[in-house]
Image (cartoon, rainbow, N blue to C red; front, side, top):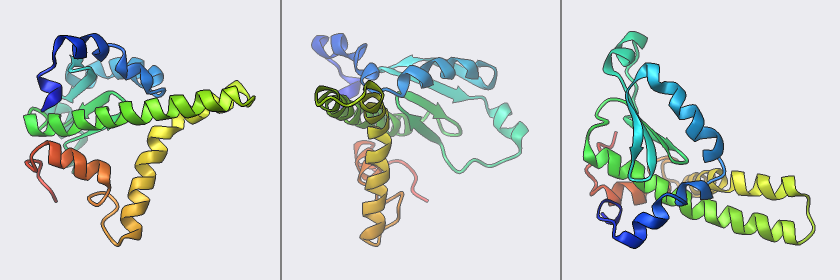
Length: 168
């Protein structure tokens, strides 16, 4: 995977790419609040990764069906979170967020240049990644596919992980 074998130019950009996604300005600081429930909170490959402690998951008495999820550049991993295929899958979502964050920023700046209020531009920037994910789910549903598995963001992340992620 390209992300795991970065060259020097990519490493220079890596520290700036997460800040293209507007939601990261809120999510990343909140991620550090998870330390009491996590066995690890730290930066890996340009994302803040939180690995939930197994005793915390057992204490809640629930079998979480998900092994991880991504919000912006905040990755929360539960069971099987140490699996490199799961991490590759979730890191691919970070790349998707970067691209949609850049799209939102460009559209927001165009909105601002057209004389719209600054808050409308900021809202476009902040909501574009979520809108793109939700619209991909809607398209999958309209095609008669599963809203999650048929979503092209998920298909791309599973393909990037070599289809090694367990599909339910």
